[in-house]
Length: 212
Image: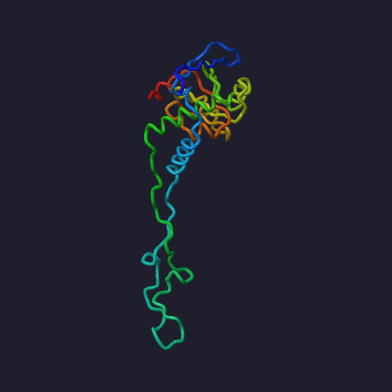
């Protein structure tokens, strides 16, 4: 892993270069970690599962308390309940039950995966840093104009430092645009969207939070 920070250009809303921001070594020096990224996304998706699927066992299905016919002498197979799993409308054998799918990777692994995802975006030329991102009013049209002016397209993850009602409301109706505050940045969303747009302050906060 390299021990030198990486300088990333910072642009204005008019796409002019107005400075640089430092991407620290613990992020910039991360190699490709495909399996760790896979495991992290798998954990995030598992943790989002509701786990509410439920079927009824033989003891829970309503009805079937009476033996449908006598044990012998009818010529038919023995039956003890019309709610047997073998009968239509009966119970389910080994069906799903409410459960939690949640599990967690070690904290160091989660931190390393997030660093690797940011480094991957930077290497692929899919990471843009803007000095600041502001809108006069919450208008989806205005946000699209800003994104077009920055050249990041319409499939983008926007990472801001703090709550910004105008930006968050403007992106609400755009299915391929998502706004996250710096503390909510995660591997799944970084990999899901084609471009990542950081405000300078947001990137600095994320870099500080990910220090080993």
